[in-house]
Length: 228
Figure 1 (tube, one colour):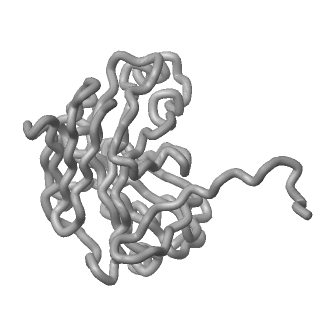
Figure 2: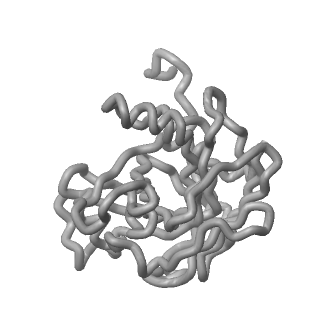
C-alpha cells in the first residue's frame, strides 16, 4: 500500500554513455553571463558582476533530439552550454575539492523565450517563464568524468542549419567549474543528482521551426536537435 496520496511523479533521469544506467536529476542550476563576450552582447560589464544563477526544472532536460517551439513567444533563442552532473555535494565546498563531486559531463542547450525573459526583466520579475518551460534544456547522454576528464578548455560551437552561430572556448568562462560549484554551495546545499549548466558563449540568437541545431564540445558527444 502506497503512502502517497497521488501517483508518484516520474523521476527525471539522464542516460549515461556506454551503459544502461540512468542518472537521476535532483536540481538544475544555470549560471548567467559566464562568457565575457556574451555578457557584453547582453548589455553588461563582465568585470563588475559577481556570478548569478537561476534554475530550470529537472524535467526540462530532454534527450529526444527535438525541441517543440514553445507557446506565447515569437523570439526563442539558442544558448549552447557544457553541463556538469554531480555525484555528491554539501555546503561550503572548497574550490580545491569541487571536482571531487563531479560525476560527468554533457552537452546541452539553454533554450530561452527571450521576449518573455525581457518583459520579466523590465518588470523586475523572475525569469522562469522565459527559462524553465517544457523541453527547454535539450541535452546529450552524460559521459563519466573517468572517461572524459575534467574539461577546462576546448571549443564549444553551435551551428544552425550548418551555419556557425556560436563559438568559444571553455577556457573563456569567467567562473570556472570548480569556482561555480564552490560558489553555489555557499548558498545552496548541493547533492548527488544536481546538474549545472555552465553558461554560453556569444552569438545567441533566434530559431524557427524546422531549424536543425548542432552543439559540439571538444571531447564530448555532439548534441543534434531539430526545432518542431
